[in-house]
Image: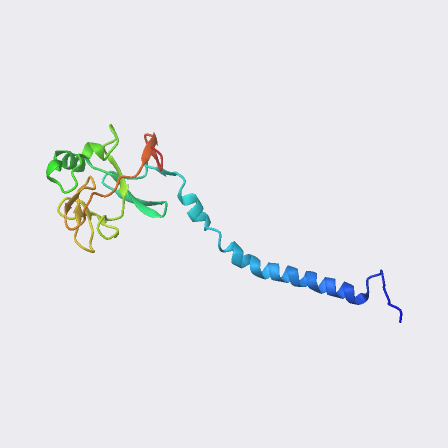
Length: 177
């Protein structure tokens, strides 16, 4: 009995390799979308970066909501009446005592930039509502003044401050100090 050894690939070997390669390419093309969906969304990737906001179109007395790091941010262009009310309030007797001067940038008292998330249950309060013409959380009745300080209701703390700086008189950069 003699053993048949062939150094040349047979037709069966070629078909086996071609089928295996085709199966590998097909499997990779099916698996790729599932792997690609595990990557974070492009808006999530950019969310941590500083956000530039043009203040020029914001009218006096207007509150604008922007999003940074996935959370809403209030930018309030306060009126002279709102500024005076916030500065003359007896802040030492408040639940979370903080003077208005500690909540705004010096010389730019007309601009207040705070997180738009209520400190009680994480709701988003409505602007220019309540007894203090600030923010009112309709979910549980917390009221904040025009400086974002808690005045009434179950919320334990003021609306949190957001890190920001002025790039110019009409532009701020949220996320930088």
